[in-house]
Image (cartoon, rainbow, N blue to C red; front, side, top):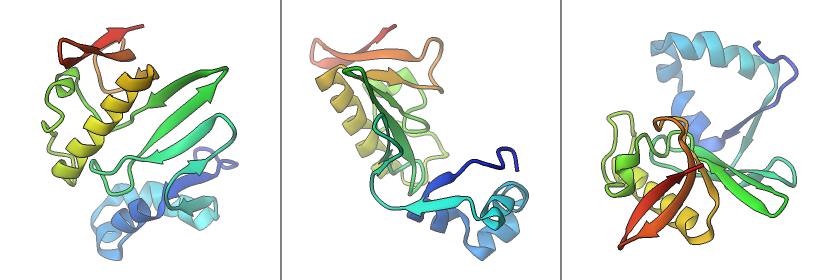
Length: 152
């Protein structure tokens, strides 16, 4: 195991999606990387939101995969969201319906993306998008009836 003392929090529907016997049998990376974690007893399956502590919450963001989550951060009166695979490019600010081929459910992904962007624009939380070009961290703000990104 990479992190032998870690607990691995996984949405139940994400686990069910990837760990079907026929899926595991056909994908070496699941057998090599995920099966040992399962065998370790360190997997924590959950449904809905999951508070990891008073500052970090896993929040369902389905579409890219059935159990994809974002990480909500709330600390010192500030909020942020790590969006993971919910958005892959700033062009999706104006076109949340533009989905990469990796989105399992493009319609749901578009709905989730738009909702995340609207929530970030409404309350000013910091948007942390690892797939976006540098810097990928900033705020989504309304601008002339559209969404705009202000890098931090």
